[in-house]
Image (cartoon, rainbow, N blue to C red; front, side, top):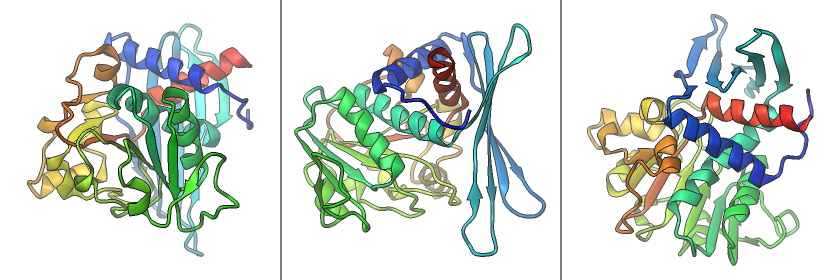
Length: 293
């Protein structure tokens, strides 16, 4: 399968919510991602998971090229844990976009105030637009601002205003979605007002971080999966090495958030949610694809 069918945002969010609930109950398995370095340069990351009667693995190679722009692909395989037979093989590029955006917004739905009205999106590419679509499925935002150096009034999504800078976009926002490929901070997370929810995703850049590692100590920090996020997310790894923050301060992860097993934000500090990507997210969306096909 090379083209991803249209999947309603609500269906994807429900599939992820169910997957993380099963993971919390011990009815699913989420091993750490594995990184294989290639002798010729580059690497391959494998994301595995077991959910219900399906095993899934996504393999994502990063292949440096002489012209400086590396090749990144992703393929997802599902097979039955009852028969051992393959169920699905698909180009996971579009699937990864959907699960990444939906995972961020699943956290927003649990962490943001029910009356959150102002949204800022930093970035304007495919991932940023997917984040926007999912965010609109969980909150009725009355004001949406987007910033990217390449964004113009002619290319901005409907109902979104173009900000002149990242700082302008995030000023006074209730929710901030960071959707860039940056390897260094793009906003000052420590300057956000209490209760603001900020999400951040991973890129292929080594130790990539969209906020400053030093900011973590002033934030209420959540991640996608407690056993893996602190050892993978760039800002968390750097902050731990510098003695600025430790994984003990992680307030909760998605299995805990969807089941109410971790503390909710206090409203006293900004809230930061970090995702690094999980096999169970790929598997949940891939199973949904099977149902829709």
